[in-house]
Length: 214
Image 1 (spheres, helix red, strand yellow):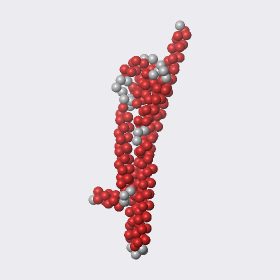
Image 2 (tube, rainbow, N blue to C red; image 1 turned 180 degrees about the vertical axis):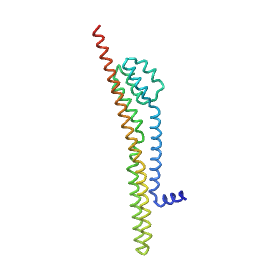
Image 3 (tube, rainbow, N blue to C red; image 1 turned 30 degrees about the vertical axis):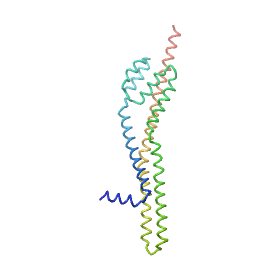
Image 4 (spheres, rainbow, N blue to C red; image 1 turned 45 degrees about the vertical axis):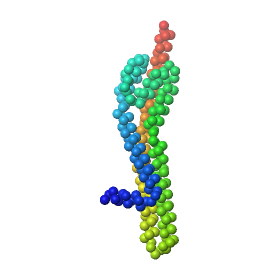
């Protein structure tokens, strides 16, 4: 029964319901894919290992760091290891490049989701306008003798607006959540990358002082 009602609702909206169906499927795909992605990211995080890595860096035990993090899939650790590997050249730029790559991976499909939030209501309005035009054509041919034909056509035209708004409302909440996760990840990356740079500079200063004493 419910399936029949949904089918009738869909076909009552006219041809614009087909692109709206595509929008809804795309939104659903992106939301599920991103939820699984961030769930995987949370499962791969290892904050204890991060603290151990920074402690090893404070001691200048760079080779031990690479052994310690072997097999880790924590995105912050990957960025720190990139900086450690390129510490003799430019640690900050190496980490910045690695961070950009990680953030791009985290922001995948966000543009598509943002586009659907904008396009779906516009498609709904387009369908409504087309339906109202058809209703006025019916009014012009049938006159006011059959008002139900006109009001029924307008009611059907509003179906596309309702569908478009529903898609946009459904998409905007996960979109904002994913954006907040992206900003939080960028903050964590900056925090640990800055800590590593400070540790490396401090280690370099201590080494210089020891050489001067000799």
